[in-house]
Length: 421
Image 1 (cartoon, helix red, strand yellow):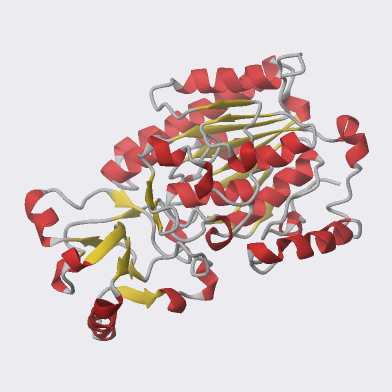
Image 2 (cartoon, one colour):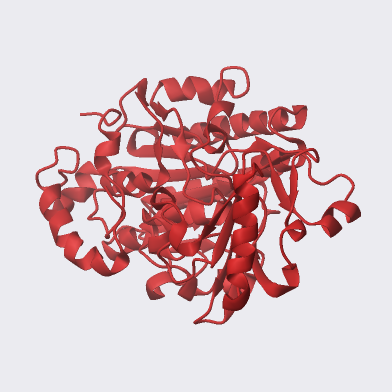
């Protein structure tokens, strides 16, 4: 389905509901949800590149995937960064339609900068547009619990899921799983049918050491062990046959090095621009009198073979779906795969920078593609999909839960080959 501006969603929504009655994949008697729909557990391991999934690096998960469905990859939204991708998965909308256009954002109306480390802004609902899956569920009488999912810490649309947790990276892995299992099996009216889980350690090791390092292999084995523990706990709680587990990630990872750098101050006076996003996608607002000079200098360098692409807001490729929101910056520089955008000062003061791995590059690169595995009663065993865009996941979750969807950019037909009859 093509990207739909938010202002057109109300008109489109009535058409979506009509089409739902015609689609064999979306036929679901909402009134009979209790007897037909299963529970859903959505899991993200940050930075889990699609090709990390293998018999050698993740033996348990690889074998588990054979019992359900997997894809060649989950194509992230642009930029292939953590916050925009987790939120796009939750709402099924491209960044230009959901407002969360990057890890760092400037909003001229709010006169505020959003940064992922700024607790006040992260928990401010104004930044988040669209309807997250937990709101869709709660609005239709299905309780939800979120263990560290982007957007769930803010009262989006003036509401929160029944259970939610403020992000705390110190919470042990097993405790996160135990809490979610408890939410799913409470036996009270606070029991949830939708839960989310999030883990960041794989992304951290990929950033620090790169994609092929022993430390990253160890992190993948840690993922493997957690999935084994999770599936055993689901079984112990009697949840296996009534729970669909959907495992995703936000992006992949690419090795970087000091041999592949672009110093931005070689092309512009950085004191004359408002830097918003950094490497490998630099975004900035520029005073109109200086904008043409900066753009022309960068464009000439690009045409002469510099390893980046530069775009004014109105030039960003349509396929990136990041140009039509008022928060989209004046100018965007996208480094070629493996290159880092930096400054002379940053290089001189950090002799080991850059190293390890990074992400954020153009989503068309396979190295940016994330993992997708789905196991449970509603998935056909040993089924397979080609790589697909992450904005479709919302449609899948709504279908599995037996709910009516909010307006979104996804298409449930994406999953026709993996859903059981």
